[in-house]
Length: 451
Ligand SMILES: C[S@@+](CC[C@H](N)C(=O)[O-])C[C@H]1O[C@@H](n2cnc3c(N)ncnc32)[C@H](O)[C@@H]1O
Ligand code: FES
Image 1: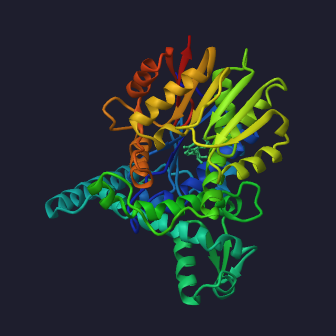
Image 2 (image 1 turned 120 degrees about the vertical axis):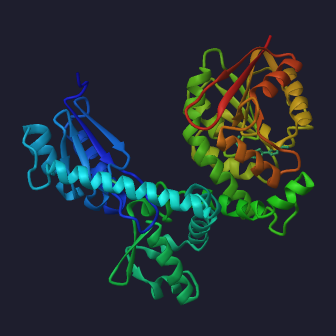
Image 3 (image 1 turned 45 degrees about the horizontal axis):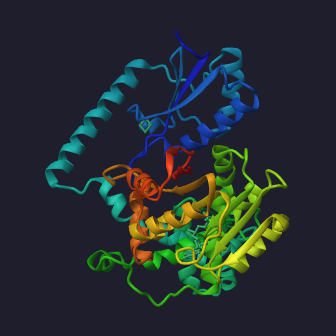
């Protein structure tokens, strides 16, 4: 029995460039269009939309199958979506001009495709060709560098409502031919469109990369562009076991971009953290290395009785002050400039937060920090660590494993750690009832109670 009235499978099989495939003929746009229409018409409880792999009919893509009847559609375009929803999904009348029901021809095409595919795979295997997966990983830096350079040059803002290469090149003070080459690559990456020599931002680029856009991520992403230079030292850092000094020190602009990057992430995660910890009995919070103060701001907003102290380094505190003042919550938040590893942390806190902090420090530094935090907590107060937590043999999750290298190239002793390490340090520092709380996204909480 089918759990849904209709179950739609849309092929989204990615294939190497130049090989015909449903995505290159527009299957993602069809899928998005279907999803939008299904939501808009309140049909999401009756209709299941699923992506699927190659059905061997790639020259006729985008291919889509509608079950339980098993109606096959070919060459579907996003402009066909509302007709399919109206006729087929709402009135049980398939759109005949797109239906493909020549079963013998479909079968023959699919079998031929399968045989060709297997022959190509065998030939590649014999020739010792580098697998696509490895090739993509190895060349992954090219798209990444392209976007980061575009952000550094603020090219998306320069595109504005649409402009030619010469105009854009002049606006970003760049070499005309080189700017055009970069713009063409951005078109190939699907971040910009080009029509009649005029470049325009896609909806995504306009939303996330353009100066005045509400969701502009550029400042935060410029921190990633800064970190790029550190990653170039990875080979030497692995040889020497620590970060390698580079010329590009942390200027005020570097620090502002870093905190902006932290803020983007922290603002999204702060409600999750507040909800996971709860606010019952919470009056005094210490936010160590609070950055933009996003977590303290979220806690302070839960009740006028909550007071937060944020401790950060002198270069960051003026930025924190701005963020807190913009949030209109300055009366509940005090800022302290200092060093969390050596300063007296105070006393009587209900919660001490270490959000994205422990990965900057060595094992010994974290142990010492946990001991100091234990002394600064009130009875039954909680130490909360939020970080990318590795599995027991430290081989994943991928983000945490890569982030550990990020710390190798960027800090003297930092790394990602696993749950056993965090719990052990908490236990040694005198914490009880140590638990891990999973949050959606890449970082989790480890919480210990000061009994
Ligand atoms: C990765 S950021 C995390 C910021 C914030 N907790 C968040 O999650 O958005 C690390 C923060 O710790 C601060 N920091 C680094 N070393 C510190 C130290 N020794 N004492 C106080 N703050 C420090 C940095 O300035 C920065 O704001
Ligand atoms: S890629 Fe869609 S059928 Fe082959």
